[in-house]
Image 1 (tube, rainbow, N blue to C red):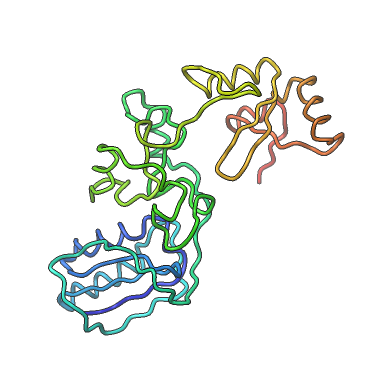
Image 2: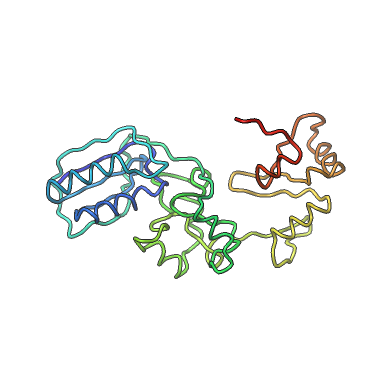
Amino acid sequence: MLRILIDGIVQGIGFRPFVYRIAVTNNLKGYVRNRSDGSVEIVIDGNDNSIKRFINELKHQKPRFAKYNKIMISRFNGKKCDNFSIIKSDYTNNGINSIIPPDLGICNHCKEELFDKLDRRYGYFFITCTNCGPRFTILEDLPYDRNNTSMKEFKLCKECRCEYEDISNRRFHAETIACTNCGPKVYLKDKNGIIKTKNAIEEASKLLEKGFIVAIKGIGGFHLAVNAIDRDAVKRLRDAKDRGNKPFAIMARDIEAIKEFAYIGKK
C-alpha cells in the first residue's frame, strides 16, 4: 500500500471526487480524505500496474483548478480496505498549510441548468457544483467540509443528498450543493421589513429601472447598485457615498452590451 500526501490547491475544487473516480477505474482499494492543514491524504492498495496508472492520472489529469505544490509518496502499513471511499476528514493539525481557492465563477453546466425551465434549479441564484461556486468567502475553518462553511445551516433535501452521493453526478461530494428546497433563499426588503413578492430578483430589477438604489448582499459583502444610464439615480448614489468624481464599476450583460456605450480594445 502507498500513502500519498498532496499539498497545494486540492480542497474545494472537486479533488476528492476526482481521486475517487480514478481509483475505482483502476480497481484500487483505499481512501481519500481532506486534512485540516488544507492538504489531501490518499491511501491506495492494488497491483503495481494499476497503481502506476493511478499516479500518472493523478499527476496529469487533475481538476482544472487544482495546483500541486508537493506530492509525497511513501509506503503505508495501515489497515487494508475492502474498497475505495471518501472518508471523514482528518482534523489533526499537520502543519502543511495548503491554499484554499477563491470563489469560482459559474461553469457552463450550471449556466445551462440555470436557464433550463425543465431543470429543478431553474432560476436558482445559488446554483453550484464541484467546478464552480463560493469557496473562500464561505469557509470558516479547514478542512473544506460543509460543516466548516456557512452552508452547515442548510440540511440537504432528499434530491440533493442523492446527487451528493452519486459518483456519476458532478455534484458528487460538492460541499456547496443546494437547491430551492433546502438551500439559501433570496428576499427583498426595505426599511419597513421584507417585501412580499413572488420573485425578489425580478422585483429588484424593476426597482432599478425606476431609479431606486438597491443594496445587493453577496457572499462577500454588499453591492450598491443603480441604473447606470439614470443620471438622477447615479447622482443620489454619489451624494450618499460622497464620491463626487471617483468612477463607479459598471456591470453589463455581455461584451456586446458594453460595445453600445464603450470602446472595447483588442486585449
